[in-house]
Length: 335
Ligand code: ATP
Ligand code: LTN
Image (cartoon, rainbow, N blue to C red; front, side):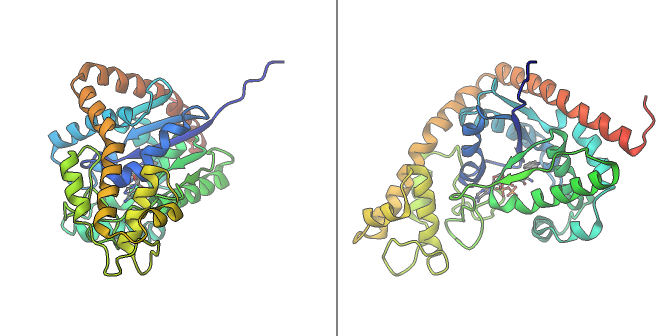
């Protein structure tokens, strides 16, 4: 008898809420390309999540397309990976609603992203911002994903997804695969260059704290030269006492493949000026081919359109099966 082994699945996504940062690249996208042979991978532009914060419609459309181009330019082969736009697959909204009804007010109130974002958007604390984790749980569970590759800040969201899935499975019997987060050892939390106690983030108010994936080399170099360090003048890894230098070491480690020991040896007895220049150059060289390829792809809208159309079809095939199963389990009358 012939047996076919079903590859394990991966699902992840990023909100097209602005320009992608070095943080999203190192914490998430960079790790995705390497997983394509071993797993069945689904990566989306999470545009439905993005409108939890008010967006300019034209910017949202442009960011969504740019993000798709950046995914491909970062090595995600659209044949091997299913690349799609969340709002193109209605199953996300369908399962999202059902899961809203299996997610508790108390657990949503404890989410740090909700607390942070409602503090930042005090004039628009909408219901979508609050129930965001249920929509995200649906994103993952629709594909019966085994692994969710994300940066450290998203761990809590994968945990609540597991809780929701276990709760649903407990009531209705095995329905959802319980996913695991997949968080890189180095690069899981890239910090702001100007305030290294805060995460580097695309919605950061200080443009110097944040390096964008598609930024010009001279701007990247300027930001690294200005990066906050300390007065010890010694390149040494010590997160608690030297957050700025340790952050730069992490960035350098991931962009060059060097270990912390090698980096400490390389810069022993040298000033921070040399070190910051080297980190900047390594980032510029890592991002240069991605920026060039993204620009090339963005000039070919017809090609990008074929990718997201076929992505939506491939994603829907899997996602619709899960929605049918769930609708049946909760007792919706079959159409
Ligand atoms: P926003 O400012 O709109 O909340 P963000 O810049 O924090 O966005 P997201 O779009 O929320 O980034 O994150 C995309 C992916 O990149 C997620 O998997 C997230 O965990 C990861 N990520 C984001 N910022 C960082 C960072 N500074 N370090 C490591 N990983 C990150
Ligand atoms: N919440 C994530 C984006 C996101 C996501 C997902 C990540 C939406 N749906 C599903 C992994 C799996 C964020 O803000 N970075």
